[in-house]
Structure formats: structure tokens, C-alpha cells
Length: 69
Image (cartoon, rainbow, N blue to C red; front, top):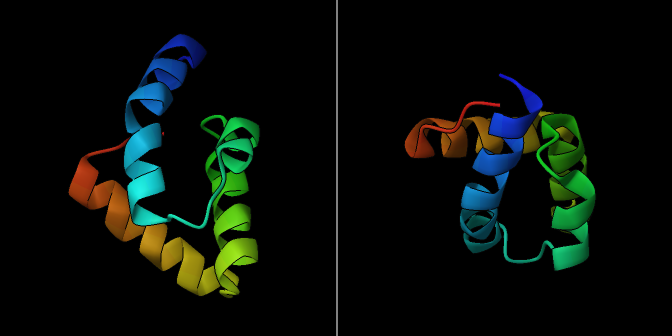
């Protein structure tokens, strides 16, 4: 996926990410800016999850929202 499309998709899904993981701040989401690995890290930090748990939740969210990085 090219960067323009990823950026556009991120803006579209940013609100949905915040709905799912409400402990993420706007600053967190600005830093992540569509980078999957950084989102996993922020979810781990905010929720105290291990990497496997954060990856699992994110994968389930991606599948349910038809989000492609």
C-alpha cells in the first residue's frame, strides 16, 4: 500500500482506534500515524499487555474493520 493511501486510511480509522483503545491519547495516535508496529507498542504501554496480547487484539480489530496497513 502506498503512503498516501495508508495516510488516508489512517485518518479514517483513527477514531475507531480511539473507540477500541480509549486509553490511547491523541498524542499516541499522532506518533503512531499509521505504523502498525508503533500502535502495538502503544497498546502494550497503555494497557500493560504483552506483545502477543496486543498483536492478537489488533489483528482481531483489523479483521473486523477490514483495515489493511
